[in-house]
Length: 166
Image (cartoon, rainbow, N blue to C red; front, side, top):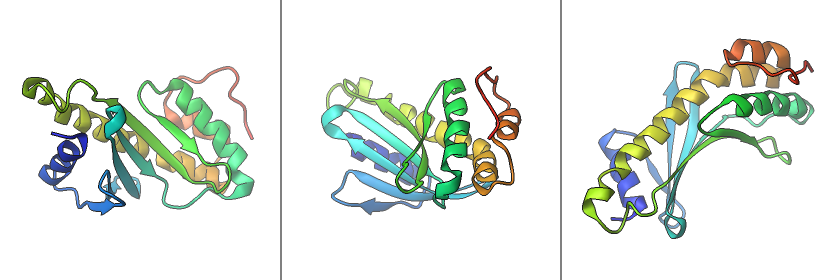
């Protein structure tokens, strides 16, 4: 079974409303968390054996607030053990990415392949929970209603000595 087939089955079984994007390696969905609603993308990179899952902030970061948000997500990324926030400096598109290397688990031994859905579920659940946890902080800094330092302090993560205010 391919990564795409495994991820598609996962999303159908978990009753995610998914849409096929492009040529059959990507699915899109929308997630409702406690702190907002946002679009998500699931992607199978069959040739590399990788499953990727992205949560995207619904609105791009305004150009004048990007440096502050970049500082915030630098601190968040430094402390996060799984996944990372990333921002496109050209347009302010912000997303959280988790990935799983499934090479060796798909397209071969059915017993090994049985682990793939659980790994996909862990990546998806962790991604959604992380985005939901930090979305209010990112939006607060993006709107200018919260300083970078306040966002860091509210994150609940251990802060570093180089984390400075905007």
